[in-house]
Length: 415
Ligand SMILES: [Zn+2]
Image (cartoon, rainbow, N blue to C red):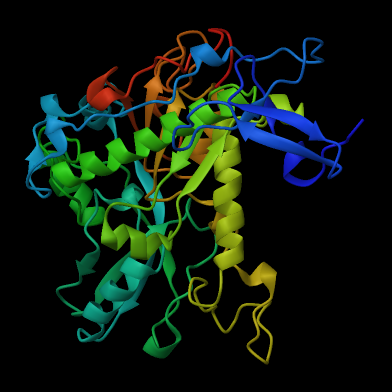
């Protein structure tokens, strides 16, 4: 008998192994030898014998995905790709008929604002705002600055109170008055009449047409999405080999430099479903990804990413050393401004978790007709009363070699 230690204990089983082994009695060792040519990234496997204590995964059904070049991503990276040529279909998540809603009442939400008495401070504040982590799509329908003609004081919009229950911390060196709360329109103005009414509350953007409202995608960004989806498929193949559901969630570094800077995401987060290996029913890929982003943010949340606090804050101490609880409430788990790439349409629980995390958008490959919460049995960000909406896109099956093949899970499974 010989017991394999070290690397020898790491080989997985295969019915058609690429490694054979023999016991070398002279040296008291086990000798492993490749039995055929091995491809790059191919796993080395041995044969465990005929009496297995687990159900082997059919290796023949698991092919490493290969990707050819793709015409669509060749060319000027800044050129905007026409909507119908994009490799994904966007699912509308705005309420069905916002016009109708507008006829009766103007919906408002609360927002934090701050008066900026000195005009020369405006540019500095706008620059600061871009890196403050406060900017997100929830106020994109509003102008940033309201100018009071009579007093000549400008007021700067910081964020919605739903994004920050406490007054946002301002830069220490600016000597500004304390932020306060005002009511601002919840939606963009769709008609001239509503623009006038809404702008009397806060200067609002005018978007007469709701059709074609989607943000344009450049060729470079499509290439970025393609690379992300390739990573998703490779990971799905790899975890399927280990007996997991081939369900993957991937948060790459943002494409946009400004978003990269604002979100401080300098690392891609790749997570997969671990329900089988952990025997834990909640270890869905999306939840694992959100958790990994939280861990990353908590680990990198140094003073640069944590805004300085108000001097009146009761938790401030005299030495200026920051206590963990001084960090903005829960800010490190947020996916604000980030795009999540998914192998499968997330279940209702994960769709709701994405909403709570303020994700910007998700793109998935496989729709889950019986369990999906992003367009199939429900569309969570489209529900009445939710305080955040995120974009949903479904990859067109086969575009750029990205297909549902190999991602099959039981149709009743929650992804
Ligand atoms: Zn899920």
